[in-house]
Image 1 (cartoon, one colour):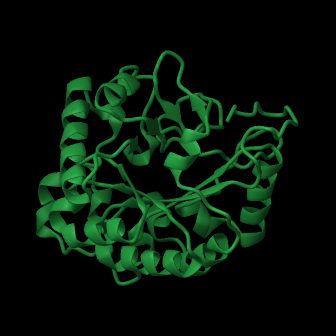
Image 2 (cartoon, rainbow, N blue to C red):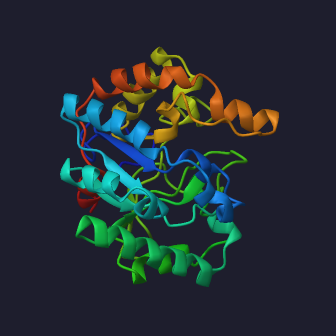
Length: 286
């Protein structure tokens, strides 16, 4: 597959519509990225939302890509085994859910190696894909892709090329492409191609913020440009009984706004297929 440049009008690359459904498998308390020392004191609930997602995926016949936070391998190993036995693709989400731009190269590599080992032990195969927490690869982390490649990662989905204070701020093409100078495929989260701007829409908070007609319009608009749609969700977004954290107002809104909408929105999205795994998509990039 040759990536299609924005505005080219050529759809000979990714044949539209191509969609990937991905899950960042992390627990409700992993949001507290500055307090990992408290994690083991919290109730493990990652299985609640993940099992619900596995049921929806099985019913629709969809294989997802599951970015496993390796701490979950320690707290819920049976859940990881269920994901594997259901035939879903396994990738790494790191171990400690730390923001990449707050780490040194050495710290990130140690975290990555730990995650690869734990995930490989449970799944029977070392993961070949990676996603950074909060899409936090940034211009401050030029070593990021070097670390991935030398640890056997073949493709990555850590770039969200939108202007947003929550993400790393890397400027990159919003379609799958081979990273210059690296034997690695980058699969960004493409925003909706609203004229004059890119609007995030394809997962997480945006599933709960945008109306369903806008989500469908956005997916169709990307498909018309020959771009795949990369959906992403988190198990805690489906767990309405999760403990509520004491957060500042803006984070509280981001975290808890319309959680009850996640299941019907996801059901509608899964019905819109077809879907491929992100590894399968990466294999099509020339």
